[in-house]
Image (cartoon, rainbow, N blue to C red):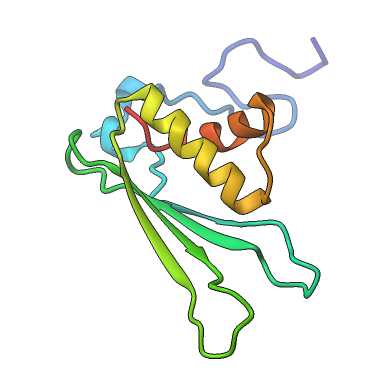
Length: 133
């Protein structure tokens, strides 16, 4: 132990900084104080003209355990003038692993533009898992 350092966590350390000592159970309303993710936005691969193939927004209202994961995918309708983007709305059961995997598969194919491997799909599954029960 360096000169001047102490093993007592309540004392000033050798660097002069007091170590963080608050425990999770000591924080009032700790369950409500933890980090929450409200939404995540994803952008698909870029097309040759430099625009994203598709966009996706993933959200879930945290108030109720029965709330589904909401996934909105915005896909370009095409190159024809006057065509507008199409928004696909999906509601996914936050407690159903298979439904979340199926949504991850759809997201991967839509945003990347090809049918990916399980590893490719797992990347999207892990994003959706932030909203799962």
